[in-house]
Length: 119
Image 1 (tube, rainbow, N blue to C red):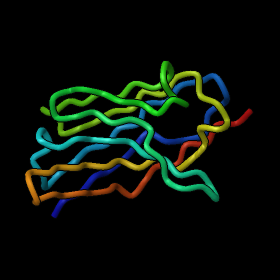
Image 2 (image 1 turned 30 degrees about the vertical axis):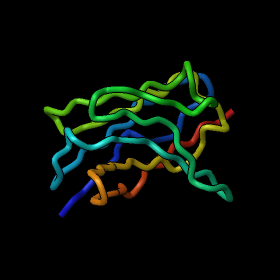
Image 3 (image 1 turned 90 degrees about the vertical axis):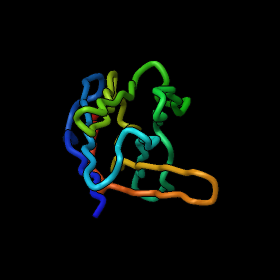
Image 4 (image 1 turned 90 degrees about the horizontal axis):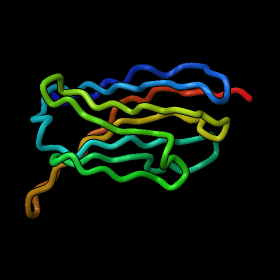
């Protein structure tokens, strides 16, 4: 079955950096759009960044210029480099894989990794 496994979360101070990784198995990784979402306590899950199968990227306004999403299809892995972290970046970060062709689509989620940024 499909599995997405995130890693790299932790506790950092404001201004520091973290790199999250998400490795997929059981799917054709390269054809999926891969995204990072986050959910802070008491808030809805929100899109952080997405990278298409072709390598195009899109970011939430709140992270533009600080976060970078990338993928290594040979390793079935998507990364989120997070720089200049702020306390408001504290959340559980989830990896997502999406694929669609006509009426057929798939949508998978990882279990999440916690990022805590202290002030």
